[in-house]
Length: 552
Image (cartoon, rainbow, N blue to C red; front, top):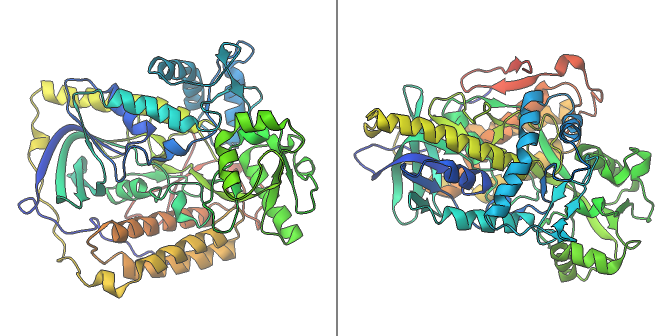
């Protein structure tokens, strides 16, 4: 394996006497569903600060289309939802985690309704959709195909009512601050105030995923893996970094953004066809278009290779046109922008990076391996998704683990307050670095490196992987790390690139290490799943080799 160049612990130099300080009981990094649900779970006697690098309308949660999976139909059963999740996870889910989350789902959905979320209804009851891998109709959705937007509207409305919450938008988190192995808060930056040290009794990481590491992605621009890199540099264990889920159906039109076409479209009866109009999914899986995402993504990739064509197509022309337009108004509008009728025309699609399954290792309450640091949502590896996330379990995980992390972190912070602990009020001595390299931005074309990284990840660490291709990718990324990571940049463009390189390298190293095919990790040179690899791959900063961790 390529020798690893380990970057610095902190991306920038700083000193406690040269930057402003802020103190809060609980610091939440990320303003998506997991972060805000955590804020809502924290005791009102505690001060809470939510830091987000964009605004509350820019999280991946806002972009979620399909819905939230939950057993709310009397005809459905918890055991069915559990079985579907375990089957999709290809042997790497934690049974106890899956069972607990599935059983909590109806209460979390009811909670959202109580907060004013307007889910779609049919005949006075919740309208339930079905998506790939699910054996029943159990997906609650809103605004047809804009569930995330409606859920976040209601949750943001609740969070902004909290008089103990301070929101810091447009603020980039540079690094977590640790002292004697304990997380004490974070170093953040925004254009108005520059660097600020935010000291916290407890910190919750809810920064989302890493899809922007790939050229083809459904994720918003901010999904660059920052949280995983923050935790990694702070000494937290990360796990299963080889598992990036690729959504099978991403709108593929030159000049257009890579818009997700929700899996619910296939759940409603859409067919996948090749360039000649031939339906192909039944030859790959008896579940056809409703097979799990890893199966559909690989089938599409094979058909694209076979036909030498840049995409396949979604065909809804055999369905009732009025029903299609009513059920999927957002998608119909996006297609209309490019002169396509969702209900009548074949819609060009191909896979795109969608959901980071691996991430920061957490326990049932969202605790990481670093004391004082919690995490929730897509930034984590909780044991729920295994090697392939079941559709519409992501918003559910954000709700469940956001609430748990908020309750646990808030409980510890409140105990600290009541016992008079003042440890977080004593700033640790910063580890100084060399002065910032003012010429770094001029020396390096950061946009070119970023674009090159994203293209390389798509070519070599995408839907289909091989050992030789991964080795080439690792050598290339390692070379970039050697001259990018030592630089001290002055703004988020440089810091974000450094985070992307750190996370991409972990993903490649993990993909090299897992010499089998499992879930979303498809090794063309090792196409079978092996019982010996039914294990987690974990990484700790400072250790050159990973540890294989058995399932609980």
